Length: 330
Image (tube, rainbow, N blue to C red; front, side, top):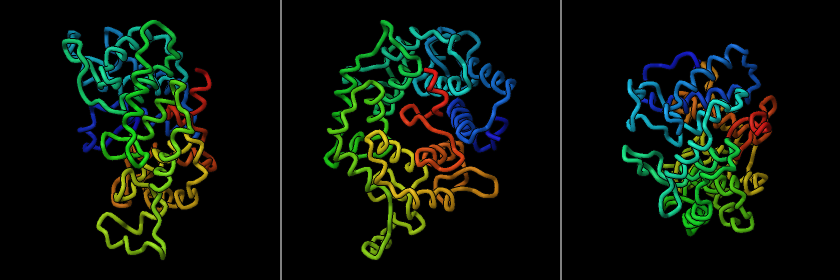
């Protein structure tokens, strides 16, 4: 349904259309859906329509395409990552992209402290959000392109920045530890060959404690407004927060990078995903038991189930967050 139509409330997500397609295509692939030749061609051609004329990356939506290209119609790191993931999953050889131009754009998005901003402004200067997410996107684009050219970014500066984001409790974040940002930082290090697992034991400890359990020993916590018994077995992204479907992936993915996923109670996590946030009427997974399903949480639920080797789901490359079948060819 996501690839053919979306409800009107999704209009606000138009700028992230490639992200929605990425979630749908990768979910279907993990569920072993067999795309027809025509479907692959149609989706691939649509994705390439978002490739900006100067070859530096992909825009998020055709809404942003201007009649005459200029600096107001740039690619972004997030949409370039999404596009490359979609194309790779569909078996495209990426012959239609100019790797040097994309990587030069990525390199130009890097700032003095080693992190990246999401876009270049009309003057060609880095602009936008700058945190561990952008480090992950830059590293993933580099790997997806299998880049070994002359326009590589400063890897050592990025490594230093990522390590500087480690907090007192072992998590990574722009201040408070955050499971999603922790995954992004660890995976970025892994993608550039710089993840020394011996350095991150405190991080693994913090991640393990993101899974929520309420037993006879801590039931008093349920009196706290951010605790809910229905979250049993789920994961939260920060201390003292509700469980959320997407964090099952961010936490289990990060623990997998640290070779510590054996500390996850998989049975309880599967129960939360399959029986609490899965919508058995229209399909898909939601953020919590009280929300509607959406492509983002559906994909990350399936991705988490893949890492836990749930029967019938294909293998995930949890570093790049795409089906393993796609990256076997890189």
